[in-house]
Length: 281
Image (cartoon, rainbow, N blue to C red; front, top):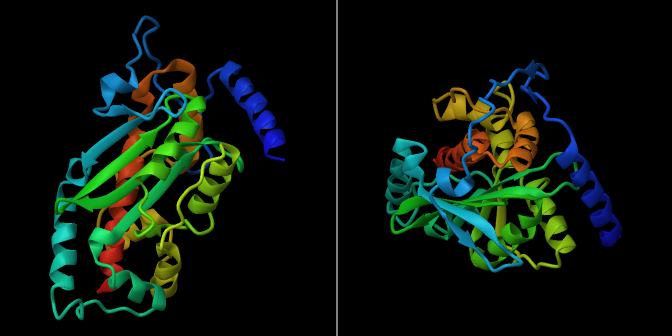
């Protein structure tokens, strides 16, 4: 079955790679026109545009981008300070836990948490091309993003995830129990890579619905970001446009197309960290 899926996917990706570039679709399903680039403009490579390094060997290579969360959102540094302040009060008694999952989360303190968010190539069964992690290191939040520079580097980002995941860590996602983690396990199985199971997985979508489901229009991440974190993103790429944007990047190798995708993924992770704070107090 895996071999059949892999062959079908290979043919589908070859078709995408040969097809004409398409316009992007915004969140309402309306076609958005992209600006015309000069025909003689030299595309910028990933290495030129994003500070990072190549990770993995020849068969498992990918591009690793690591930045402090404050590079994406200057106030992100305050999140760790607020977590530590709450945890330091009577051994964490300041946390107001309302569910068993939040109680388990509060007991582990921020240094044992890792946030995860992925971007995929489109419909179910398609490859993952970006894996974003957020964890504390040296007292600050660090965003780690594993990028596949072409379809063949999916194996590399999955291998990098497997190597960088500590089974003792608590995994925190948003809809990750239904989407992110099952997708990663399926894609890892295709490449015969074993991903370590986390000691505990907390899905913040479930917690947000329990807490705010009756008081908010919906519990989409950016709705929560607006109503609970008090900020709205400007010129953020719609999630529905991300797969087509990546396919365009693979066709052109112009990393400028990925700037909004990389930023979108990083900001999702920062928002998850801040939502955790709101859920625990």
